[in-house]
Amino acid sequence: MGGLAGAPQRAEPPAAELCICCDAERLERHPFDPDLDVFRPPQRQHEALVKLVRSGDGCVSAAFAEGRTVAYVALQKPDPFERWSDDPSGRIWELGAVEVAPAWRGRGLALRLLEQTFATGFFDDKVVIAQLLSWHYDTERSGVSPYTYREALIRLYRKVGFRVWRTDDPEIAGRIENALMARIGPVAPPETVERFHKLRLAGTAPWDFPF
Ligand SMILES: CC(C)(COP(=O)(O)OP(=O)(O)OC[C@H]1O[C@@H](n2cnc3c(N)ncnc32)[C@H](O)[C@@H]1OP(=O)(O)O)[C@@H](O)C(=O)NCCC(=O)NCCS
Image (cartoon, rainbow, N blue to C red; front, top):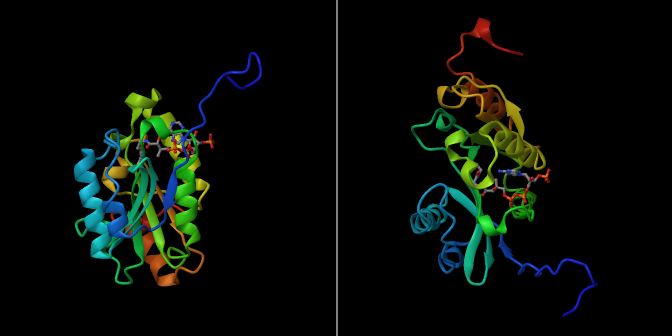
């Protein structure tokens, strides 16, 4: 046995290979870890994300280890029924999901995936929104309150250029544990940025606008 006397014997975690804005074929070849179950059953989420990439309306970055997907981030155009889709420029996108299999959490995988995805420059001319909704939080496994969870997510997303924005979207505004964040790309056209601000306060009368 190697290691210093008294030093904890820690197995070196296997390295994960990142695939940034991954192509559909490669993503399809890597089934989901069975514990990637926060948003949907793993197999269904895997199929949905492969389909999203094939549609051309999404970017999925994934971490692979031992032949499986152990983490991913998915960015996509907002669903047509959401207010955020009402954007003629088509440059408002959404960070739809970020998920790391429990055994792989706390090793910076989410941060690395996000950093490398934004480093591609593809999102520099876009506004990417992130809806932090408490019913997606894995409070059961993390053991923290929804509010603490929200704060942790805000810290994480801030590291890649997101900031918190006020909104009157009832789904988000209805709970203090929720938040709207957005990353305004450095070369996002002014009309897209203006549209984002109008949409986030779409139900607020002009005299109620917060500044
Ligand atoms: C949130 C999640 C993606 C973070 O993945 P991860 O790879 O463990 O995150 P990282 O190791 O990159 O950590 C990044 C930072 O976020 C913090 N963090 C993120 N989520 C956290 C959480 N739920 N609880 C505590 N800390 C959290 C980490 O402490 C770290 O902060 P620090 O650098 O200041 O210590 C992961 O916990 C997860 O898959 N959760 C379930 C799905 C989910 O909640 N997705 C987001 C909601 S839409």
